[in-house]
Length: 238
Image (cartoon, rainbow, N blue to C red; front, top):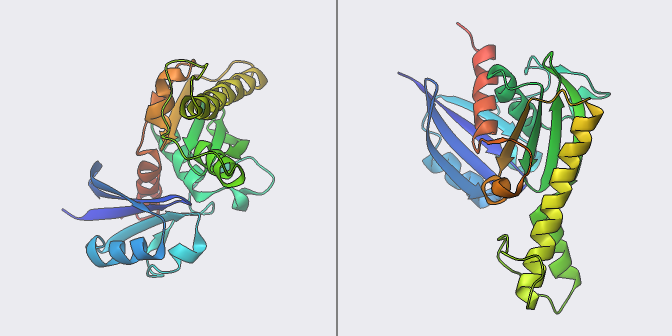
């Protein structure tokens, strides 16, 4: 039984997963860097079947050009936007996984270096979405610009009103992010005339933020990898 290695190259992390048929095994997460991609090439690419989604061309270029690459052209999605070729491959994979599992009409919220919102209508068309700075990216910029502020752990504090600098920062970073996410989902639902049936969270902050998202939702940390596999399957039917 052959396996397929799926690689999701993001701005912050590279995630590698092995599929045996449709079962996802051995998920590994690396910091996005040339060192990581060299490690992955040496130790993890043991299968002849490799599929890649990337939003970091410089890192992707270090992998064999013969490996399958996800794109807007081979995704077989209806991307009802002005420039389909500008839609990020990670977003394409997320939508593919959701649609193939009948999770639409939906909003997919992916927490990475950017927080993306993808909107799929009742006919499985991608209508567009929104891109906002990721919570960690916004916080990093704050720490870089404010010399007296030190980095804090990304946790949601019990109280909004902090009693020291650390809890002040955690409150401001996390609750402002949470309120922005809840607000964006509400705005999208309103614009979609409340037709949205599914909200799906994925990406690094999903589990941390999930209990503070007021909209009914599901969490799928492997959504992008599943989408890569779905697109590979469609393009490699025997």
